[in-house]
Length: 143
Image 1: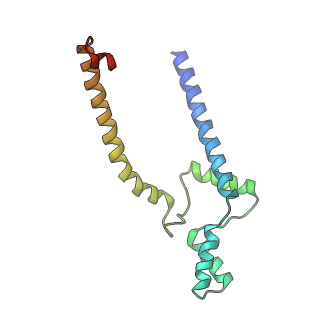
Image 2: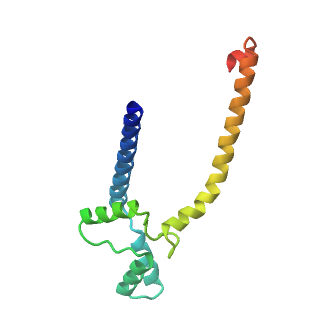
Image 3: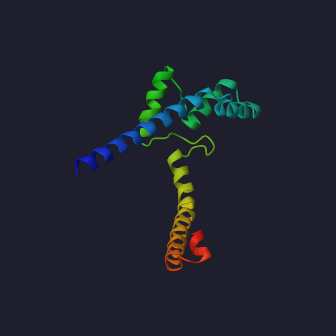
């Protein structure tokens, strides 16, 4: 029993470490890519007649995006948000939290994934039973 618990703890630790590594890489990639969605929205508001300062402030308030502090402080805030499932405001769906946007997409993803999993399970069982019954046939050899 101790061996199983130790292996499970090892797998869990590796899984958590992998999530942290992927989250860290994602943070730094997003910070290093060229282009700024906030700046693009500011430009749109300026074209509609807002002053640059007012457009920038309105955009930052609209998206709840106020990067402050050093890169390290931003990283700590980012990881804290991930741990508490506070993913911030969506940039493409202004005013909506990212979790609600993901929730909407998830319900349309679960059904096809569930259907595909059940279908592959059923096909696998049927083909496995057929291969066990018809061991000497060409199709049985193929399976």
